[in-house]
Length: 263
Image 1: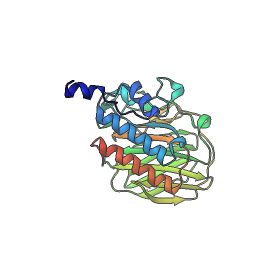
Image 2 (image 1 turned 120 degrees about the horizontal axis):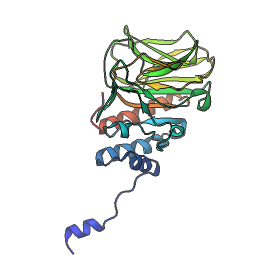
Image 3 (image 1 turned 90 degrees about the vertical axis):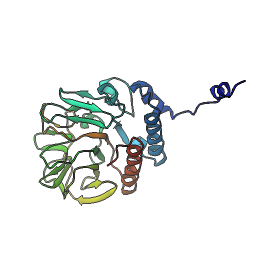
Image 4 (image 1 turned 45 degrees about the horizontal axis):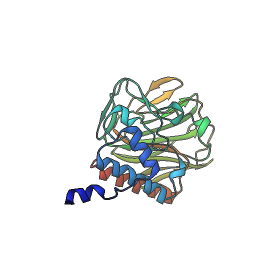
């Protein structure tokens, strides 16, 4: 028997079932991308935070049809929170970005249906630096708001299940991994690249009854705040402890580094 015949008979490495389900649904054929997804799932489970997510968008594969899938539930259904797009979203191996005038992604996640008033987080990995009034994730209905505006006039602004006032911090570069995180009715903190940069006592006031958007925000059914910041990862789920938030960054940054698109 030849060497190559022996190689063909050797058992192939198996992937975590959740990673494999996503790889199959999104038709991820690149071995580096497959490995990155599998390691991401294993890391999130290893840190005991996998169950805290309603949606994880790895934005991998390079095409609209691949970027739409939710790692937590990779069915091609609204009920699985897969993304649908407005015209003007550009896709590449580095992520997806809106054109600033019409491009956005609808997560199909309605906070009042699936999130918890006093325990919610939003994550966004931005590969683009600009200092513009753009919203990378959010929704608004009357005074009730959820949004991430990661750099406008060198200030980042987060809102999580609340009305004004909002959580703000100085930010002179919009690249990086951001987490807006509520852990109690009077605790909201903001994270950038695994470091907690601000904590405020802004009160929770309710859960939105409209879908959250990426690359823009849903203003009561009208899309606004279009963003051109390239998204390489996004997440929506329960609130995270300080240790969980730091570990979350470690897992996501390792994922981006494997894909050679880290910032």
